[in-house]
Image (cartoon, rainbow, N blue to C red; front, side):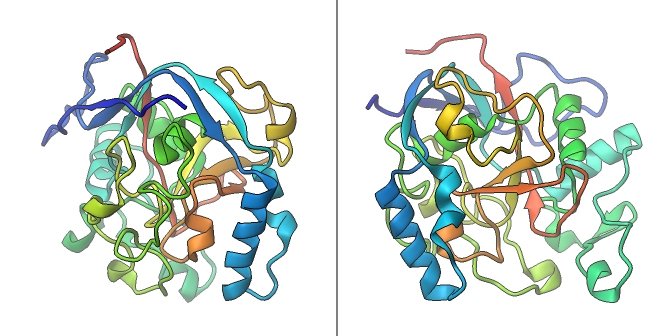
Length: 288
């Protein structure tokens, strides 16, 4: 396997509300082109199943079959955000564009409304630097486009999370304890953590919160068997589908769902209180 290589650019404190420099890569990490191990072997699936059964007696081995098989996949170089998009950053987008705020306005019950941390275009100062939630796939695409970016492909996301050697978790194979926000109950503004709260949980490329805190939308349509028939060179997922893919696990999940290979799917128009995103960008330059 090739060695991991990345270059990070410090994040700017403020962003323009009108126009973004296409050559501005602040707050992003550069991921070098090359091959990486995507997916899981059957033995990996069995290990994940055993981990899952310890917490959920209903767990089934086939739940992890969409990760199979383990293959070497080739990607071009790209940039990806070091942190998940925050409420403060998303608010700037909402105010600049008139895009709807980050909340589920289809709620019919009090428990559903409790999952909305935004009240119109305002929210508690406590969550300014927490990841934005209650955004659907289309919201995420719109924000990234406004920033001059795009959503990462599923393969790009997985490489950024696992490194070229295919780590179990972003930091390696050790326990998520004190490395991620997970296995929590809903506690309103105290549910999630400020992005970057776990320096021991960064990926080999220096990315934070690639496991836990919130699920992250990626560009690809979801297909359970895509890994068996999809291309191994610059994969971008199926051309069409019903569901979009989510990666990374969230505050509510157990350790088995925080694995870098774990895949989840959702209708693109649905909003959740455990789902956010980060953006990516094509690379115009190669670094040694």
